[in-house]
Image (cartoon, rainbow, N blue to C red; front, side, top):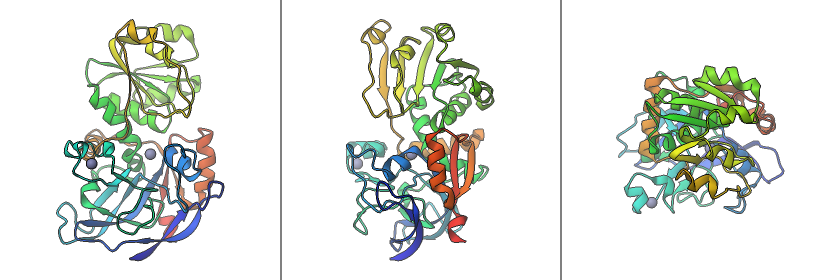
Length: 351
Ligand SMILES: [Zn+2]
Ligand SMILES: [Zn+2]
């Protein structure tokens, strides 16, 4: 074991503050990574404040962060994919049982025994896992991703959660050339969703509640932008979408989007509104519509996403901050006052 500096919250009401946490010495299959950048995901805030206690209470102290990019500093003797000096990335998972059907199919995100990057039982050290708001991390090489060398590291970090969360459903539902795709919500997830759907060759329509976002949505790659509060603009697209990616995590009217699906179209939720959403059966049965959900992606698909982003030069739009500003960043994130993701420069923790 060795100790590293980290930022943690010690209760659901306390701000994040500097602390020291243990990391294991790399075993034969482990990769030790010096963390260079860590994106700030909305889940970090929900978990730090124990807002998802119904699905799994937060154990304190918590060290959030699952959008990790860094440089390999040490590898175990059996590691074949990485050597010291390589760029490496870690997303939302650091382990799984590798034996269940989901794992055998490369869908580790659905493994009932997977280990999340933070606040998940730590098989090695006991207690819970600690995430990327720290100097370094030690992860089994199966869960470590390669980073295309052309990508800007600060803006590539959010791909590890926001990127795969949007890429996986776009791929699963066959988004590409000749398909008309809607992306609802232009936040951390949605803005990457627009870029990816555009890079996949689809005709992309961004839905936003604020007319102010129009220019930006077009810049991100949308072919058209619809202000969802404008009934006429919505009506113009009735029955026309093959697929809609819904990234909104607040209450909103699902039926008005289901009405925009073409026959056999699918609307997939990747945001997680805390209360159940109302859905009219008529919004589904008339056009044989599907309402679905999706969460992150498996390790192989996460690598595919990173390689795709390397080829198409897709990254998130980020505001880089020092770790000392993380609490302020949380408050701004709640007000959607960031275009579109915060990325922490972890050098600030080493100063
Ligand atoms: Zn996340
Ligand atoms: Zn499994």
